[in-house]
Length: 374
Image (cartoon, rainbow, N blue to C red):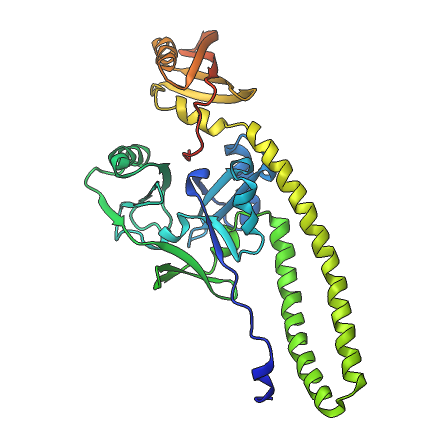
């Protein structure tokens, strides 16, 4: 058998890991109930956090070591073009690009900061936690670092003198075994991901992933069968050297041609779908960008209750304010924003010391840009 193995095809290389842009995702830390399925709790949390149902999101999660919380991340599917997702089908894992940075946490409470490919990524850590309390990704360069750190500290309550760990390497993920992934800085091994993370970190469709696992088992047996068949064929060719061996090779080639027909049909269907997605991507809603544009000017007493998009550029916000003067101040502040075309305040009601009101905003065309995670 050792002589025959040199003529057998070598095993294919492991599929790559795709790191999606982190600024396309919003990230939240959610609590988990012990003894309940994690996936069901994550789906329920997404239904409460996102303005879109989970089936319209690419989402994943990373459970904490104690099982009491999870880091949940999700992105609206239309934020990814067909060209972005084309390579996802054959990837071993598709996850946001901030996931490899989770193994580089500081020794205590602090912030991990990385600037690469035009993105600033900040992970805020609490003392003794194995998952960050906040992940913020923004488009920008070194000139935006101070503003990003101020935002992170404001959201998490970290002290200004908390440890800051700045990363300079090119952190990537590679498959190192069956279901095992490790973080590399260039070619240097940094650490391996916890074994419980890869199953939930993949943001692709759960049905697709389940079908992929079934296909992997099938392909493993097919690969073993291919190796066994190759050995049998080599032995048959050596023993018979006749028409029987030639006929077998001919039938194999015909079978291979037949198996390629559905693959060709699938490629044609995928191309048609990609063209359709490209057409629809020009008319996508951008609610996260709208909310990110109006949130910095919001006074502390103003609390958003409900946000609804009205067309591609309209946003309706139902809110409450403890201080009634903040209603007019907030509306005036919004009118000065370069992204806002008009602001209307209506249905202002005061009851039990709380003022409820509705803001109807219209954004300017071509002002909202891709990028920025809430």
